[in-house]
Length: 126
Image 1 (cartoon, rainbow, N blue to C red):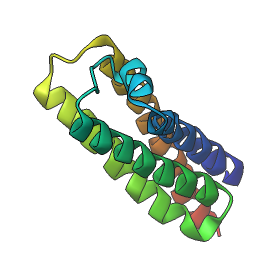
Image 2: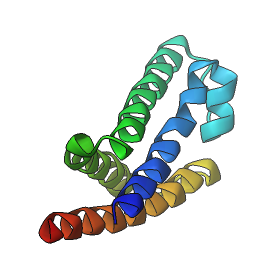
Image 3: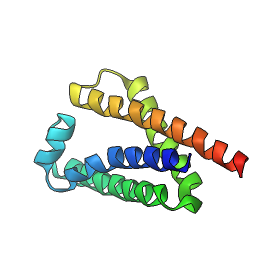
Image 4: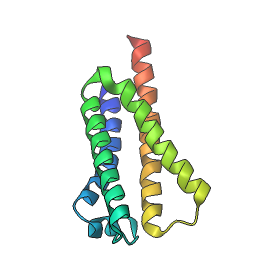
C-alpha cells in the first residue's frame, strides 16, 4: 500500500511540475496554454504561477517519500486539482491546450483518490 501511495503522489507531482517550464519565457507559456502572453503584466503573473506550481510539485514529490507529510500533500493536491477542474467546468469554452490541462487534472484527481484510499487503508491496518 505504501508504494501505491508514493506512486500516486509522484504522478500528481509530475503533473504539477509540467507547467514549471513556463517560467522560462512567454513563448513557453503560449505553447502550454495556447494563449498570447506578450503583455508583460500577464506574463509576470503566469510565470509566477509556474513557480508556484513548481513549489507544489516539489512538495508533492518530497511527500511521496516522506510519510509524515502525505496527509498534507493529499489535502493541497485535492485543493489544487478540484479548484482548477471546477473553474474550468464553470467557465467553459476553453481551448484545446486548456482541455489537455483539464484531462491531466482528471488523471491527477483519480491518482489522488486512489492514493488517499490507500493511505487511509494503511492507517487502519497499523
